[in-house]
Amino acid sequence: MLAELLLKWPLIRQLRDRADGTGPESMTGRTLELAPKNEGAKSARSICPYCGVGCGQLVYHRGGKVVSIEGDPESPVSRGHLCPKGAASYELVTHPGRAKKVRYRAPFAREWVDLPLEQAMEMVAERVWETRARTFDRTHNHTTGMAHLGGATLDNEENYLIKKLFTGGLGMVCISNQARI
Ligand code: SF4
Image (tube, rainbow, N blue to C red; front, side, top):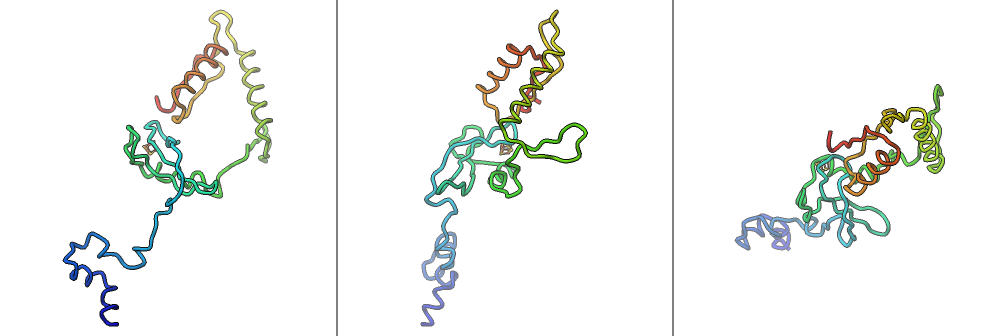
């Protein structure tokens, strides 16, 4: 009984096994039973949404819910590391305060209202088209009345399409990206 009790003490186990205290001998019963929060979860590859470094992430999910977001050891950019901001991506995705609706405040209005995404997209498109029509310089075939600043998580293909649509299609010359800035 006493021996059993003493063996629950990690130091005694360490002395008994002549171990160096860095393995299971130094763990309590509770610690030995602990499992990682993402045990048994599936993972999907992603990229950190914050800055231009583009660190690789593994998004672990179980039952349709994200359970954790960790650094991707196979990413040639970050090799499994995330800075404190990237390591907090799980909060970004799951925080109850996260905005999930389009919020709109009309000119001179004091109140914000929720808009359906479709309607908001229509409004953006209308404003882009109207601004282009109003500011297009036919001598130089361009407009400086609008600009586009991309986020750092845009990949090469998305940046290519943005440049093609906005410069080649709409004639915008002011196109940049957060990663470049
Ligand atoms: S983990 Fe940090 S350094 Fe890496 S992309 Fe995200 S914010 Fe940038």
